[in-house]
Length: 86
Image (cartoon, rainbow, N blue to C red; front, side):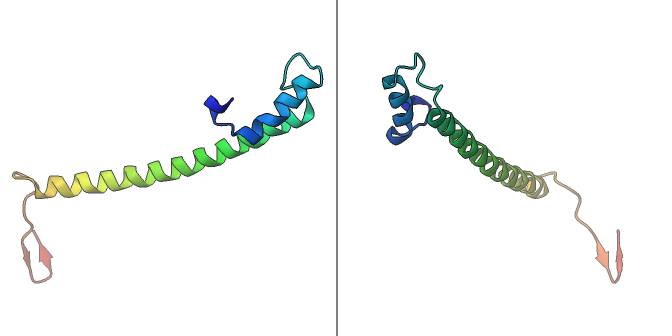
């Protein structure tokens, strides 16, 4: 279970469930509660990672546009005389 992100304390209900004679260590109420908490934790982390990914994607898009503008052969310079732009 530790390979999947459960810390030692979180595995305790599964061991206790096995010691109580259950053939599977995850069928007891305390084990099920650990599964639910872990899923909530993972959902929260996924939300945070999604937000970070969206920020990085926006930054990349902005940076790519800026790089295109600075590159040789980039957009034509704008001529501004007075209040008119050509």
